[in-house]
Image 1: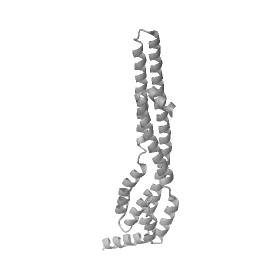
Image 2 (image 1 turned 60 degrees about the vertical axis):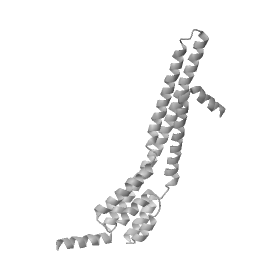
Image 3 (image 1 turned 120 degrees about the horizontal axis):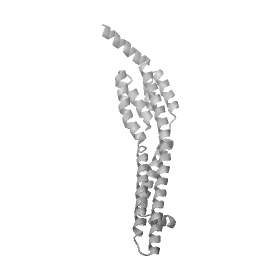
Image 4 (image 1 turned 90 degrees about the horizontal axis):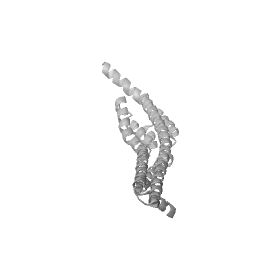
Length: 220
């Protein structure tokens, strides 16, 4: 612990800025890992098959009960089931309105990781320049020992900041790639499951009957 504090002090002010950036990144990464791998765990294909089975049987109440959870897919499926007796346009509009909110909640925090990585790199660069300024400023000293001490201190500050900034940036980018890949896979599965439900609702017996009755009334 004391070694870490000594390194931070040796690196100067910008080391603490990079440290703060790394803590924010770690917090977001843990939140995204928990959300994607633990918090929103759901057998998407299993839920889809069960809901479609109830829809095929005309039991919309049981289908809605299966979608009573907090998972984004359940919310979007419930939005479709709630408009099951409406037109295709209304069903899709209700699903899209729900998806805007739920998918934004599902993606929350991921987009910040690349910006945090860039910020860590920039803070490291500023620390590097600060170290170079210390080195060149010390060259004005008359005493050779003082010049050597200033040069050593400046180079150390520059290297500490460069290493720490690039390390935080690299780890954050790697985490972003892993989180983003998992997030995109889950969103694709949710979109496919929701689209399958909407299509099934549009060809269910009740909807076919409503469409037929609507077409006959229009013809008369």
